[in-house]
Image (cartoon, rainbow, N blue to C red; front, top):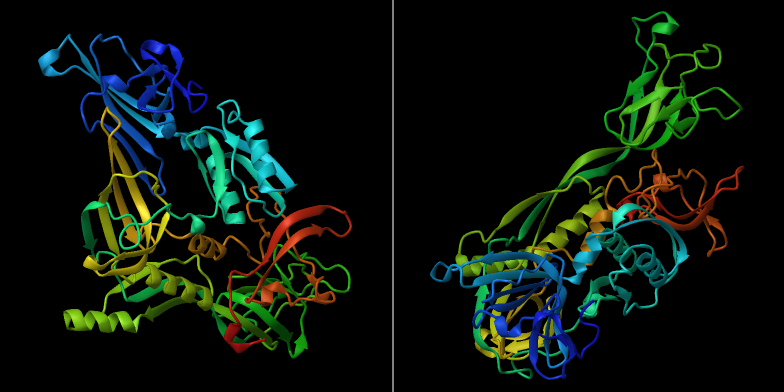
Length: 547
C-alpha cells in the first residue's frame, strides 16, 4: 500500500516523500498526478446509495510514457483527509486529433475498497462466535489481510450459534451476517471494515432553516411514475376452515391388488385434523418423515405430504392388518386446506387527495406477484408495506454545496425549506458527487429523496419477505438453518418452552402463528447435536381468532 498514513504522498515518477497535512493531491499507483489533470472539472468522486464509490479523472501525459494498470491503488486527499481510496478499475489512453504523437490523454476510473469483498471466497463453519470474532477469522484466513483490510468499528453482538458458508464471496457472507445482526457494513478509504446501524447513520449537518444555508442551485422535483394507492397482491396460499371429505373404494374393482391406495381431497393439505375409517380413528404420518412399513404398535396407516392433495395408504400389502379400501368402506378426512390468495388493500386518504387534485376516481392500482408469501397476515403485511413505500410521490432535492461531509446512505433529519413547502422532513442522501479543480477547490452536488429510496427495500422489509419464502420451513421437508448451506436436519420432536415451566408447545405444523429459534437440538439415540435451527411455518398473526 503506497499511502501508509495521512501524511504520505508520492512525488512525480514514484519518489516516496513526506507531505504536509495541507494541500490537495491525487495519487495513482506510485505517481502523484495532481499537476497533470487535464482541466477543471475532470476530477469527480461519486457516491451512490447501495453502490460503490467511484473516482473518475483524466490526466495529460506529455511524455507518452505513463501507463497505469488496473488494480493499482488510487487516492485523493485534501488537507490530510482521504476523500477517496480504492483501486483502478479501468484505464483508457487516447491521442487527441490535434496532438497525435505529442501527448496522451489518460482516463482513469477507480472503485473503492469494497470491491475487494467480491474477490475472495469463504468456506468455513463458525460456532458460538460473535460477529467481530467471525470477521477477524475471515480477514485472517482469506487474502483480505494481505490486502491490508482490518476490522474497524464493530458493535458488540450476541454470540451466533452456528453459520456455515460454502464457497461464497466475502460480500455474500457479510450480507448474510447483516441479516442476523441488523448491521450494515462498509470498507472505508483507510481499508477499515466497519459495521453500523443504518437507521442511525445521521448526516453531520442539515440544510435549510436551522442548518447550513449556503446551498445553491436547488432543484425541487416530484413524480408519480411508481405511485399507487390501491395495491393488489397475488400471494401464495391461505388456509381454509376445517373441511370434511369422504372417499370410498372403487365399486368396479373386486380384487384387492387392483384397488387404489391413494385418494385425493379437494385442496392441497395444510394440516390433517383426523382420519377415520368406518368411524375408527386411523394413525396418520407425514411422508418422508414417518416410516412406511408395518412395525411396532404405532405404525402409520395413512400418509400425506404438506401442500399435496393426496392421502395414501401404507404400502405394505397385507389384507389382514392393512386392508385396501372397498366400496363399502368409508374414509372420512378432516383437514385444513390451502388455496391461492389474491388480496387488495387501499389507502382511502390518498385516494381522496388524488380526487381533490385530479377529479375522477383518484385511484392508482398496481398488481404485484409474490407466490413465496404464505398466509393472509403475512401477505397483508407485505401489501401494506408496498403502499407505505410507493403510496406517495416523494420529493427529490438536487443542490450544490461548498462543504464536505455528506455521504450516500446518511439520513438528514428535520429538513425545513419554507420556499418549497418542506417542514421538518427526513431525507435519505441518495447520491453525492464531488468535483475538484486542480487547486483543490471543489463543488459538492447532492441528491436526496424524501423518506425511503423507492428502488430499494429497507432491511426490515427484506427480512420480512425472506421469512415468508416457501423453502424456509416445510413440515414434510428438512428444517434449514438461517444461513447454513449444508448440515440439513429434520426436527420431529416436541418443542419445550424452557422459560415457562417446560410447557410443551403446540406442534409447529398446526400453528401458523409462531416459530421457534432453537439454540441446539440433540438427536435421541445418537447424541448428535445441531445448532441454530429455526422451526415453524411461514406465517404471523393470530389465525382467525384461534388461541
